[in-house]
Length: 113
Length: 110
View 1 (tube, each protein chain N blue to C red):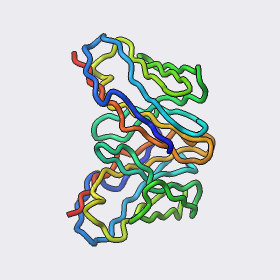
View 2: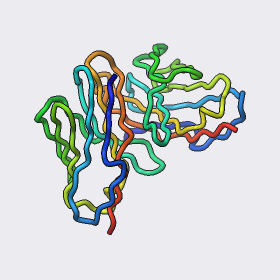
View 3: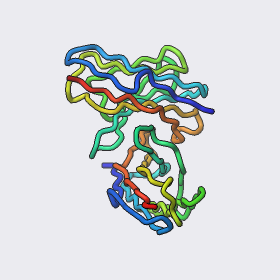
């Protein structure tokens, strides 16, 4: 059974803290993605990666960075968390030739106080 | 600007009452249109990809169709377990980004 796992289901942090969200996939997928999902705004792409050490900005990269040191792992970093980064964060992966058939993790609900 | 609009925002149906969800899009060159299902507290689950006008895909009680301006997700004789949010997304020819609509919340009453 294919799987994308995220390090936490719920996370509460304070303004200014550095936050790491981790995502691991076991499908040997080349592509990995980070989205945030907000009511009324839908899913928005933050960053994606199509290979180890490669990254591309999505639609809303400001305030975020990413790291992909190993194929199976893609990390999202909030350098200095702010209240407007309170959201549901979803990680996804897909294979090289099936880019749009994305497998999503269960999500991390982040609250920044 | 590329855009995806889904309607209605929410839909309540009785079990067995067939209906359709709409996804209209504007994109400069469509590479593909995708449907996902999302259950509460979970990540989206891939359902279909449609590539060209006239194409249809089916899975159990769901059938997705595509025209040059919109896609429909038809649900035939739905059951309560079909209750979920259905997301539509498009990918343009010119880049790899996928743009998601805001979804339709479907609730099937037993």
